[in-house]
Image (cartoon, rainbow, N blue to C red; front, top):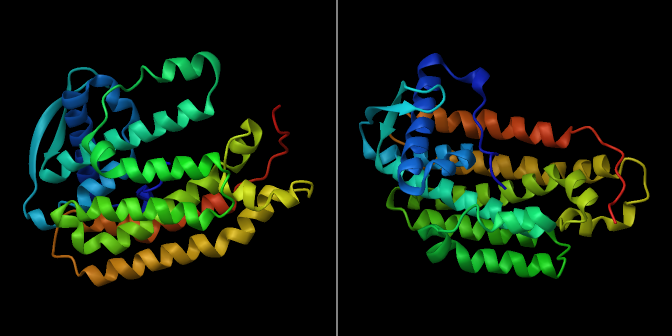
Length: 280
């Protein structure tokens, strides 16, 4: 459920791409220092997006330099800000969420090893996310067939998270919608994988009566196209209400919202169907 808040690199100017990379490298450096070098492996686009968004009201961006392990000994320009600190915690939280998903979906030695990948829960997980994650897990166990209900839970978590950060309170409605969209986009994107692995997916529960129809993955995505497109439209509307001040990172936020999200929608909706048989 991570990695969907991507920028459209083709639409970024060179200076904007450099700033985006500075945020990315800033979070990468920060999370390594706080949670260890292996935490770098699950750094996501989502953490960078929220890092930039939460910096909008902080005024001038401060930069520094840090050595990068890839390639070794090369110095990278990094952003140093409150937003980067928040992005660090977001990255850690989504890492934990991905590991928890891996635990539930994997078996045997993979399941056993997953318990050792992350052993320190972030503040976000413990203080904000835990009730919502437990609710999602409950409905997964009961095979909830309503994708909207599941997306609403993740949207409510996203809103609670934004309300815990002063600079994000005004954007809480937009972030609530982003949370809903991320959940639904992820579920549609994982249809084949979840069907093959026998994992829970609300769309597979909702449409299990059409499994015998040829190309049913395509049919599910086509039926749900309107929901994804509508949510992105609502996200864009809420963004326009924010009236953000002049800020160097503003074009990056707008790139994700007006170019990145529609591009992800298109990729998921037009994903080529595959012939897959359910694993026993």
